[in-house]
Image (cartoon, rainbow, N blue to C red):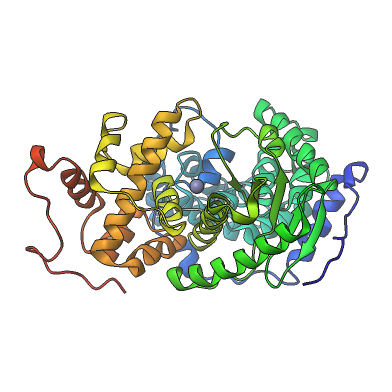
Length: 451
Ligand SMILES: [Zn+2]
């Protein structure tokens, strides 16, 4: 192990954020990313967590499919629209799909709009946004650069910088997120949540300034001066061991390991907008409060395993794993198990109508009983999934989401059964008297190969 201070760049608040963004985009690639056809043929996917945060809230936009059909008919007709007109209309339709959360369709149409007219700044800006919503930050940065070069004097919409900031934040690039959000405010962003978020990012930056740094074999840690050095070293060693176990569970190497931020007490958590019962946070880095008895605390180690699991799941699914799968697997990997009888008690608080209901219970912040029931039931569902189909199936579901396929599609592929059928099976096991004996794989249907 070696100790060194991280290079701390001064916050570039005084710089023209535009210049910073430009150099940043340049640094990310030396050449244009390769455009594969498959990227544009992705299956429809649920909006990711990042989309929910970055997206606008409101009624769904009207269905643009009729307008698209009309345009396609005109294109095939005797008098097809001129390329620039076609590009403008494609961009409008693409933007409408984006507003409805259909990013893959939006990307396809907006790419077509740019191909028809490379000077279509609206299409470039919308395409940037679509890639951000899809989690493809490199493509987004590429098209943002194109848009900026094109629109000399006119800046891309503030929404792009807002979304870019969220992506950077999720990657742990707090300083870049701050720059992006400041640019968004300068460009006229109106979302009141943005100022709160920016303030929180700046405060977090400040908190980190007071911390020491220790680099381990694969993990590194920022830690409060009050946290004993031995505890930090022990934490890094423990994370290394956990990583090997989780590499094996997920059948994948995470590559770059997230940094761990170790706090004396819960002051960091008071700065965030997380509910007070949240014990730790993974947001591209692992934030954990260190208890006084950390050296012997099983709970502390469980917390580290749990948050590392979130890192694996988030990275391997590209942020597309729903809450119940995230929490269920994280609970499972920290070593928790739950009996049918105990899980069934939670039904009084949260009837397991669907796993989506569990996911919703994690994102609310007022009802601890409800959140706790959701954790227990999510663990139960994942435990049953693993008991029936093996740990490899759970890992394959997580990884299968990365390509943009829906949870339903991936589950069907890995288990041979629909998500609805699995949910019904789990419910039946918790309420055997109400639903009769629970179905188990192998009872009547063939057990599918989970590879
Ligand atoms: Zn968790």
